[in-house]
Image (tube, rainbow, N blue to C red; front, top):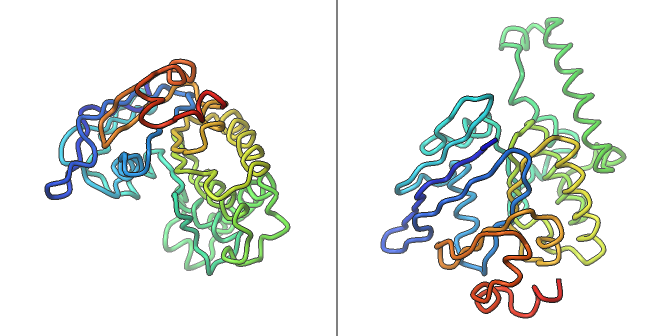
Length: 261
């Protein structure tokens, strides 16, 4: 079942066109890669999908529970509430809050109690806050961060900050998770663990995942289909084997790395 449809998406900044007439389709449950060199427009696509940028033209349609939601023009918090969550190429945690609070805050997107219940500490407020605390701790346990729940996020090692950012995104209970270079800055052992983690959370949380990544070994191992951008233009789409043997992709982006992946 189609989950996301991007049609003729274009974004221009003055005289510079960063993305031009992009068409992408994601089906429910897929794990899709979006690759290309620096400056190809990959993060711009993520910013368009999540409302950071408004498109110059084109449409973004999200399908959930047999309903279609037009995302283009919506604010980021509205898009998040629709079921999209993301991580960032440059980690953007609440660094002066605890590990626990980073996850707990994300879960408040779906709270049902009102301001009065919160102010008066009514039973509905206490019950839902306990559910949020329990669910936050369960996520931290999954990422092996429960023992550091009271530490400030800024004090975590780099790899654990990456894991916390993914946990925070999952705390919003998304249908589509956008991962922007999750392996950036990781060593080979950390990348191997991350590869298994991404595959596991896709199954555990019944997610569709769109992944930007420069590490071709990771992309080729876990992505079912791959889109390739060149200066904001889609030049190739296909399975890892098709992309691996695509001469234009090899010459323009992957060089010898893909043949060794």
